[in-house]
Length: 90
Image 1 (cartoon, rainbow, N blue to C red):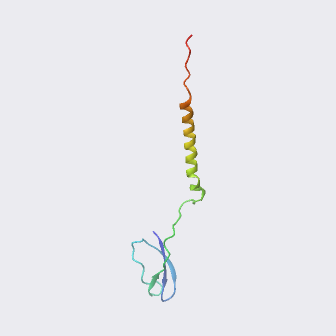
Image 2: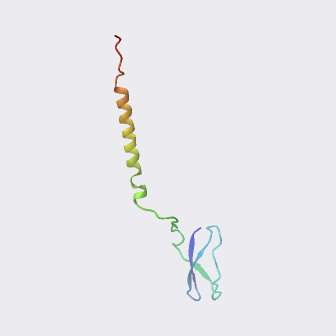
Image 3: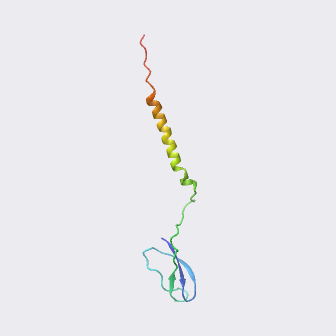
């Protein structure tokens, strides 16, 4: 749920209100009873929860996957190119 900024036309009070996107915008100021205007450009910022997000969290994911694929491919090639050892009968 986004946080929207509102400003009263009468008393110039500015405040934030946390509400669902489908809720009707607020219309009456709680302080003076004046008309409210929802400010444009607010309410669209993400809210990050948890320990944090870092650039390195996603940066090398593809590189590590390609390295593991190369390692798997090289081991499978080596195992298929080797000839089986046959024992000689005495």
